Length: 360
Image (cartoon, rainbow, N blue to C red; front, top):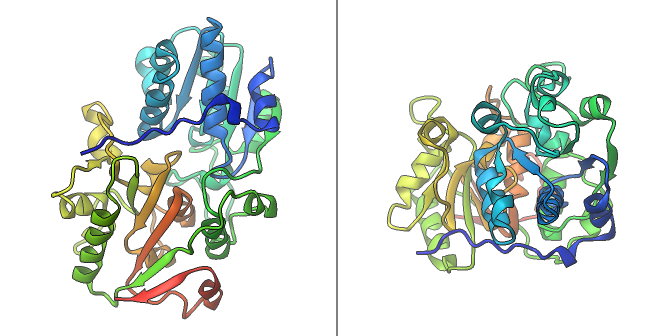
């Protein structure tokens, strides 16, 4: 069976705003929603400077995205690949002086991490970063009154105050189809998606498909198996993304990534849950069928995304929020399959215009 298929876009595909950010001689601040190319620009900035023998370091919060960026850069420059790491692992084990440090998904570290000169700034006077407040997923990052908990995260406004870098706003979507983005905008009105992002999508694409299971877990699981079997070809990446990593209560298995890894044991899948794997060296391999919680999928993309128990976004969990589900649906490039115990369009009729629906 196949490994995850890395379709690394060439540098010639950069847009003018992306190229301006890439070529800016001073540190930069990248802003933009999912799929606008923040990680792509950060990665090419890192590779381009390494090609000029400039000693840069690319960091990102999640182990999965660090793996993805490391493998992608290996196709262009081996030394650039060696200088990609997760932020925490690099600071604890591999930190050393760099000409420039580029932090992707910078919002995921506490603000004090950037303010303290004995943390990141002791290793470089040039800190570039990309950030998106809509993708702050860490537990406890949002206070009950809606403000940011700066002990957990570093929102864009605060990062700009600390570094005062030249800001580049990316507002063209390169990942999702228009249908997927319209669905995300309708389900998650809290996440502002500009009309330019929607209009810029390269394809209209099929509407996301909502399977209503009426609490029949067996039928849900068989349908997931059938979808994976039908779409499982070497150059097609499939992500099964779940709300939770661990079982929060008795009978809550179907919300977890490990449950679907066991369900799909006859396929050659990879499975990542940071609560289980980070202590054992993190993510060692990624297959073209990858199963992981939303939080560990941030920054990744898949041709097809399957989200079981999608109706859980209507529930209140201490460890996840609407942002987790928003990140989950925006990982999909072409196909988005959602499973729900109940018909979520009953309470939100607007969804009928942006999804197709099937009762199973």
